[in-house]
Length: 282
Image (cartoon, rainbow, N blue to C red; front, side, top):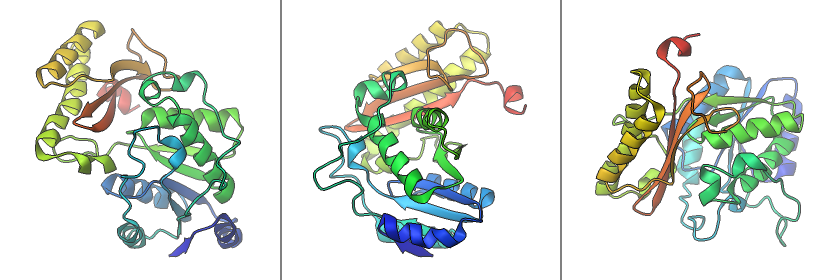
C-alpha cells in the first residue's frame, strides 16, 4: 500500500495504472465499519482502490466541529492496509494559502434538509469532491447512503458537469441496536447514545405505518410525537424524492424519509427508503 500526500505524487503513482479500473472512496478519516463496507464494495467493483483521508475545512461552518473532528490516521492506515487498499491520498491541505477563490456552488438542492442548518456545507463538499475527482480521475467513486443529500447532490454534479465517473451508493451500516454508524457517534455520552436510538426507531415506525395504509401526514405527526416524548426537537423529519430531493405527499418508489436532530451537542442524520420489500427486489 502506498501513501501519497500531494496531488503531484498521487498523479505520478496512478499514471501507470490508468489501464485498470480505479475506484475512489473519499473519507474524512476516523474510519469505522461503514467506511470498511465502502472499501469492500470498491474492491469488488474495481482493480485499484484509492482511499482519500482529508478533513475538508470548506464544508464546516462557524461553530462546527472542524478543530475537534477526530484525526486517527495511523489507525485508519492500518484499516486500509488490512482491507487491501492500494493507495491512500492524505494531503495536508488542498487549498491555496490565501484561501479558496474559485469554488463550486449548489443551487436549489442545498436549500433544504441539512442545507438549512448548514448553508455553505454542500458548496464545500462539492468543491473538495471535484478536486479529488480532478486529481485522481477515478472510473467510479463510492459514497455512503447515510449522507443521502450529499450523494444526490454529487450525482447531480457529475451529471451536470459531464464527468466520466460512475457514482455508487453503499447502504447504511448500522450498530446492532440500529444507530447509523458515524464518526460523530463517539461524541455521545451514554445517555445521549441511548437517546439517539429514537431517530432510527421513528423512521422505521413511520415507514411501517405508511406501508400499513396510514396517511403520510398522520404518520409523520406520530413520529414527531414520539420524538417529543424523548425530548428531541428535529431539524427536520420529511419525505422527499430521493433523486430530486423535492417534497413528496404521495408515496412513490423514489420516496425516502429523512431525519436530522441534535442529541446533546452532536448533530445526527438518518434516512430510509419507503419502498416496499417487493419493490426493493425488482
